[in-house]
Amino acid sequence: MGILTYLLGFVLVTNIILGISIVFLERKNATATWAWLMVLLFIPILGFALYLIFGRPINKKRIFTWDKKSRQEVTRQVQMQMKALNEDEFNFRDRGQPMDDYETLIYLHLRNDEAIFTQNNHIDIFTDGREKFDALIRDMEQAKNHIHLLYYILKHDELGQRIADVLRRKSKQGVEVRVLFDDMGSRTLKKRYIKRLRNAGVEIEAFFPSSILNINLEINYRNHRKLAIIDGEIGYIGGFNIGDEYLGKNKKFGYWRDTHLRVTGHAVHNMQTRFILDWNQASRNDILYEERLYNAKPSGNVGMQIVSSGPDSKWEQIKYGYIKMIMSAKEYIYIQTPYFIPDESLLDALRIAVFSGVKVKLMIPNKPDHPFVYWATLSYCGDLLAAGAEVYVYQNGFLHAKTIVVDGEIASVGTANIDVRSFRLNFEVNAFLYNEKISMDLVQAFNEDVKLSTQMTKKLYDKRTVGIRFKESISRLISPVL
Image 1 (cartoon, helix red, strand yellow):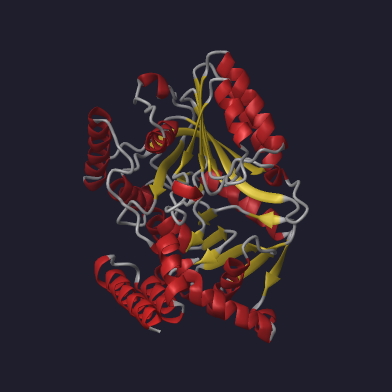
Image 2 (spheres, helix red, strand yellow):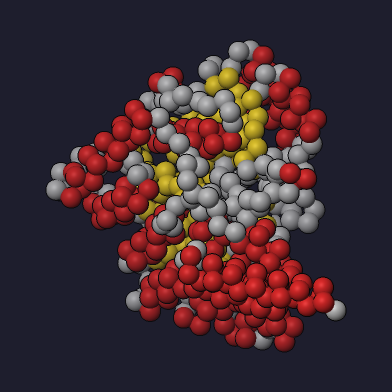
């Protein structure tokens, strides 16, 4: 009896100390704070363990490091562009739409993320996995200097093996090959896959790998980015991971609808820097910021910024960009996302847009890959329906695209979903695009997907069963910690 009393006392004191830490020291979002306090209150012992795994704040000190020369050069370019924008002296090559109307969005990303604006890029859009990976493999086959790959999920299946065969062959030809994968996202990756790559001279590393006894203390902070850079000249960014399911071969999900970009032009410089920062965090063999890694040439007229966000930052860079885009809309906003769990600021921005006469169209998948996340998504869709937005449910497989288009003038494509995890917990990267043609191509893709979707009306939503309402309520309650 005495031991039990001491144990209960220890748990109580620990919970109090942890609760004080969450409220007064960590300065979490208020909703997340209340969610964790409820967990600690109702399941004290298990709740404490869950907090250590999922709620512990990340150590933000020196996660990503720069060399002094490169840091100074980026700062110089950012300050120069911000000054030119402030003084209305920025040299836009195309003085028409959409550059002039979105100077403040460009300025936001410069100030909030040091995302250098480039305007000499060419973009190819992929919405089909087979086409995307065929193009990527063709480009890798032509590599002469280096291949850099960063993917959240890397699988040892047919596509993963096809990629590995190219990487091993190019490495033996003298091309520097580096592969970075997320340790949790790629947790099914076989050790023999990694060993075969290393034996061929490929450098391959895991981001935030598990430590003692296969326990991963950074399990809640994952690198969700997807980047590929070939010879510093060609870059890929978007939603596709490496695995057969992204080719539509998984029976559960069927056809996989995603959005990915192939980029040439100076924006590849910024994608390369993002890869180097992530690689140097994970590897002991740091990459130097050498000129040969920044070999991109002017290639088109698309203006764009590569914007990163993550739990290492005080500000939520990509979310701020989303909100700024939404608030700038005059006619319409088209959104495609597999998960729709916005915080109040983004949800309010969408409501305000609808109430201001802006047509808001949201598209989500028709099936869950994470049940609780899906039920929470349906709950928030109900909020938008009540405000007057249009919600579409994609029926032709699984929708995984992370795309926003505003007024057919600006767009964002990348890895960040519209959910709390992408905004605050995951390391993400998006391309913000300032170009009418690319934006209208994305609008056309959205409209084609509408033909393969059913519209969720408010009348239909209100008819959902008591069971579904209960699932939505529970999922929404815990959505800040999903």
